Length: 328
Image (cartoon, rainbow, N blue to C red):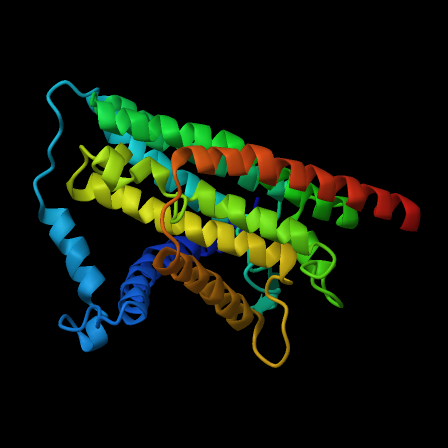
């Protein structure tokens, strides 16, 4: 393993880290402004031009707030749980291609941290581990409401992870590869949103549930659980949970783009620009949902996962398998 390869890998890791760390404040600002306009409000406007520095100010405030830990909490697990949620989101992004190859000093550099041949399994596995951060955070708080929020998140993940994985298997059958870069490469002439529209809808709904976003944000339902799994968290530990939620939104959006919308492919503009445009549209969709739909009841959420999405994903998989067998 030569020094140039190590330097290249380190630079790409830093780019992904910087992209998420800088992107999350912009997403938060965008969410507050968009929801404000949708609800006939102004949104942030006082800190920086157009309120752009408001989320930076909020981050500084969280950094200097007192870090409170419940007296009977498991201090080690209480400390590690938020970090686990963030780390899994960063690791999942490491296999997402965000552009084509570029030539730097005569060396072809692919624009992804790692191109593993089981990238989809990698993403599903790492994002599934992220729920442990929520469950352990609720358990370590030694409080009933956070514990209930953590248990809700684990049950929610199980019910939606199955349908989400099966929806991706339909695309795998068509492409014959688990590599996200390989799937993007096979969408040169047609995006998979066309033949696999139902798989995309299932994947997107499951992704919203997995990221605990409205209208599926039951693990942190304030009306029932005070604030859910992070009730006892403050200061930067709370900020890490906040960062993990928005980073997971980016993960779900990036995977959806790569699998169903051609990834970085597009005319006229540079590949990275296309990737960012598509990512921005997906993130806007997440915000739009939050401003539009009320929160579901928990029994409605679970019934929708087990009784609707799971059978629908299995049916779509069966139809895809028959079509591939007949046309292959």
